[in-house]
Length: 275
Image (cartoon, rainbow, N blue to C red; front, side, top):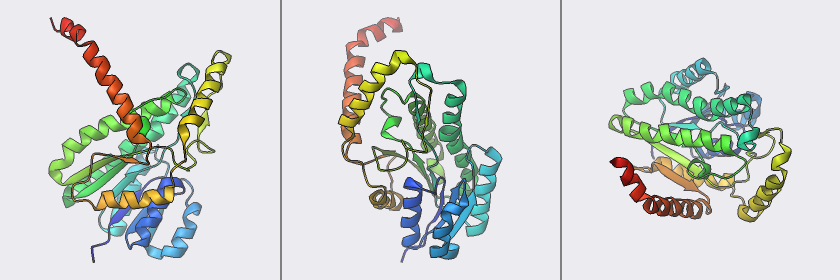
């Protein structure tokens, strides 16, 4: 029987964070589960006992991130899988975004993941192993109207995580960007925030809503996603990027084919700039 893994999961109160926590606990792993309100984790504590360590955490608080990761390591003695799952989606066309809305999106989705990652790295380096899962999105490599702030946050997460993967490979640490498509989580529901709309965009807003309906398809099952994540963390050589759901591959292929075609079309202009 394999040695149980020790997980640190942010945003464990619902959605992916909760389902992955349960899947890990069900197979005998141990989980430090964070949430803004730890009462949402009471049922997990009741069922799994001391295999789960609930930690109250707002990931935008740098010092609290450092303390939470340190507490988890001290409690369990090591960290094997660090999951930066806490995040939300903000809806608003770029012109509609306030500074506060844009900063808040980046604080949670980018800086929160950065602080937890930095807090975990000394422990992972010392033990010579570990796996950091950054929950990105198909929106981390493609982009659509109305969620520009969200895309900005996930593209930033993708950028520093790809660099990080190269920086820590020599220490035996893996990094994987998890890129889900549409899933039946609360991402676009009560956990989302929205900008005040400008009338000039009303027609486009209706058009985008219709396009989202046509593109949406059947949302993925967050519970089913756990099996895919367990397979990734158990792999000897896990991928840098991994889609969840059937839709992302088609979106990515269309986007990158378009990019390559445009770059090739304008290559003579690129060479003109070379001098």
